Image 1 (cartoon, rainbow, N blue to C red):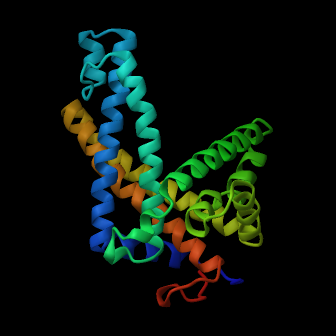
Image 2 (cartoon, one colour):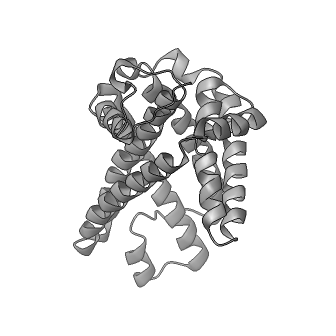
Length: 244
């Protein structure tokens, strides 16, 4: 296992992946997914609260679906979004230029199910930890940051992925925390820029938010994959053992 981990290399890896053909396709896929998700969730809210002029202004992507249909679609989007995340992690890990490949979609149903379960466990653990003055929650978030990625890349089981993530993060916790901060700041800035369009037109703002969310999502996943490649010792030429 590699003993060095570079934040700069992780971010550089992310930028390189975004500049590829596969990266561009993933950005489009995530952007479309974000817009669809906003539309369905907004339709669910409209259906529950009732459509008024003010509410319609706040939720410009709502399309007036029945609550039952919006609820079913929301569940479907959760599963679909997880599947997209699985494929994205694998593509950003290897063969991004050939995306999509059979390896990117191998054992997809099993992996999606395991990823959802792991994500729920991690979310609950972080939430419970955050109830105790926040620090335990941050500690758990850093230690379990690779759990879903281990399921996706290594085809690990649920318990195995949690143990593996804890092992991978050991000795790199502070740098992983800083990487998370950087990704959050970049994502926040991108979201802020997209939010500026809302002041001109709510619909344009919603669509712009979906588009930039696509970029931010792929960037965040790619940076995490870059960190994983270094720490797990499965490094590419562009991920040599150089530290910040």
